[in-house]
Image (cartoon, rainbow, N blue to C red; front, side):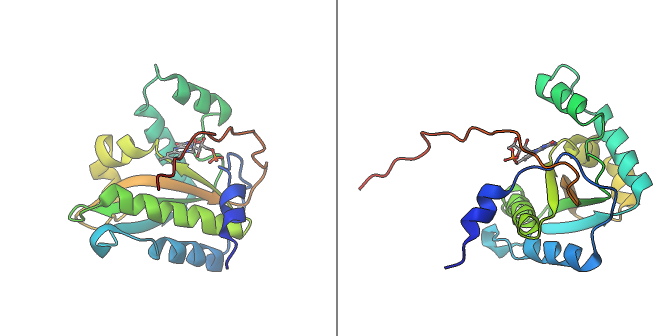
Length: 185
Ligand SMILES: Cc1cc2nc3c(=O)[nH]c(=O)nc-3n(C[C@H](O)[C@H](O)[C@H](O)COP(=O)(O)O)c2cc1C
């Protein structure tokens, strides 16, 4: 039996990256993990756009912040923690887009994103699944950014994943729900 449960349990969101860019072969392994995700109707709705241009990452950070709700307590807490960098210093950001024709779009890109995060954990690489880019990528700056990032026609950019080597390990305690299943026989 493979022991993937340790990888699942050990994975934590990284919110502090070094400024070193991950190796190309490591990046390719992460993308391969994304590619092997399950998808409704086997649509494989994902397209990965890897941004390693730091000016572009900073620009996406600024644009994304402009689209956030300032009255949202969770958002404000995150912004304070990240010193206003939604990507926490990561020098690789993977934008995950879905094919507009796919049956299970969000499910597909979510499965692919989780595969990438787990594979990264197994390789000692940090990731932060980022949902706060959604409005900037998919609505407010959509035309400008899809052109800039060469997102394929008929695709909607939806998530980003910040990827890099871990500077400070996330050691915060997370309470996992105790009552989370029931077995009916
Ligand atoms: C759909 C989704 C969107 C998320 N967006 C963000 C985000 O924008 N910024 C961030 O710091 N963490 C983000 N996270 C990470 C969660 O905050 C994190 O997974 C959760 O707090 C549990 O912590 P853990 O990943 O360390 O177990 C996101 C997670 C998911 C699944």
